Image 1 (cartoon, rainbow, N blue to C red):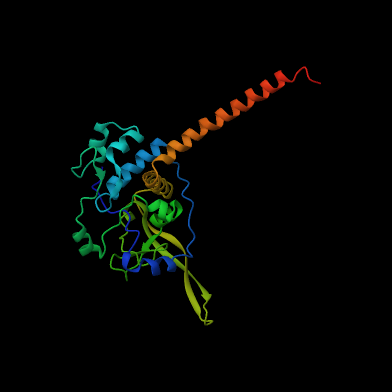
Image 2 (cartoon, helix red, strand yellow):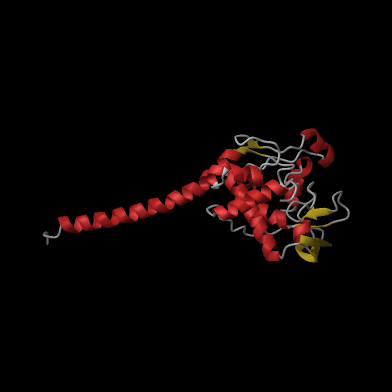
Length: 248
């Protein structure tokens, strides 16, 4: 297990509105998450604890609920997911003091409990994949989805380094303006592109689950409801035929 790191400072609070507007034209990729997959959610929980929880909290999720929903034992929790000195019934809170976070990053990293519900899973998925090298930024990196983000590219070791690709287009005054249209991998990371996509997808799936824990149960229950309705329809049809078989 890796030591806990930062994952998402998705909102640079001082300039979030302007930054979001600036990145609004960058196309989002489909996350294609599956909150019904226990394996995906378990891997996502591992990713969140190792790369997020050092700075970000998920204050609406308790370790005990995590164990119940993801088929984990208390020993699994303590061995693989609990590294902040928390108890089993405690919420998933970051160990980083808020004042220190503001000192280091300018703003305290936001709680991620509802980030997928507020931003959308495709946004979070694309955001995590869209860092690129930018020496002009304090962290040495920027993000195509959220320009001027305060978050450093903490997943660069896994994904590798990316460089921006621009195209010129006429601006409002007729002069050419550079637009960011894509990112190119210039230095490979520890994971292949396919492996990194799966890593981010599992992480986003976990955040999607945290934002609405009942969603997976609701989907599973929905299958049984549909099956019941189909069976009931079949029985009703045969009963109808039986009652009316002598009526011509």
